[in-house]
Structures are given as C-alpha cells and as structure tokens.
Image 1: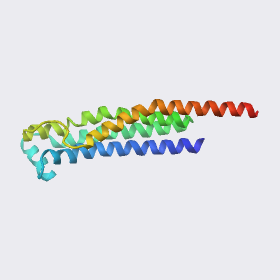
Image 2: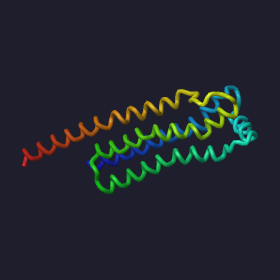
Image 3: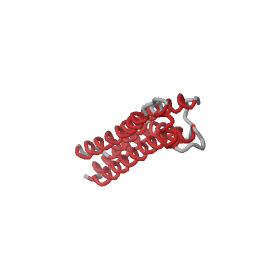
Image 4: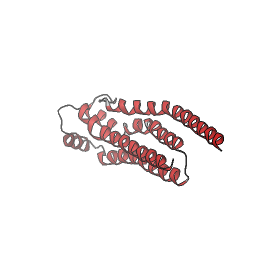
Length: 167
C-alpha cells in the first residue's frame, strides 16, 4: 500500500505541474499570439510596453499564480506521505488541487490578457482552446473526487472484511 501512495503522490504532483505549465504557456504565449495573429510575441510585448502597460509584472503575476499550485502540490505530497494517508485520499487531494485550478486559470487571464485586449482594441476573452482544456480538466477532476473516494472506501471496507474473515 505504501508504494501505491508514492506513485499516486508522484502522479499528482506531475499532473499539477503539467496543469500549471499549460496555464502559464496559455496566458503568456498562446493567447497573445492568437489574439494578435501574425504578430511575433516579442512585438506584442514591445507594443504593450510602448503603450505604458507593465508586461513584466503581468508575466511575473502569471508565473506566481501557476507556481502556487505546484508548491501546494509538493506540500500535499510531503504531508500525505509523511502522515501515511491512504492512496485514495491522496488522489482526492490532488484532484481537489486540479479542480480548484480553474479559479487561478481564470484569474491569470486578467494579467496579460486584459493588457493585450486594451493595447490592441480587441475582446478580452480567451483566444485559444487551451483555456477551455484547463477548465474541462478542472471539471473532470471535480467529478472524479467522489468517485475516487467511494471506490477507495469500498476497497478498504472489502479488504478489512476479508482480513477479519481470515483472522
């Protein structure tokens, strides 16, 4: 059972890192390029700087938002492994982090996204499908939490019953 917890924690941290990386790449690279098609990213950033927008703080803000989830995932991994939390509870914790990721994903869109919208006179909505992928991943994680908990508890109850019968 200990090895399963380690694998679940490792996969959980990896999943949160992938989510955070996609969030950062979406907001800092993909969305600006899609919002201003045919314009290189460096030109977009220079144009915004020239108009008085603080692109550097926008970039730092998005990176900080994405990093918070990764730090939280590492803390959850360490604490749940140290406390020997059962694997299905570890999985539920990581699913919770992924589900909650929709909020920072939405918030990160306001950093550079609104500057691009204001600087180029375009709409502030998401311009790529990748923001939707993040939101869908969060919804799937949210739906998976009770499933993982119920299946895990049934498995634990079945294991406890069979251990009692053997003894």
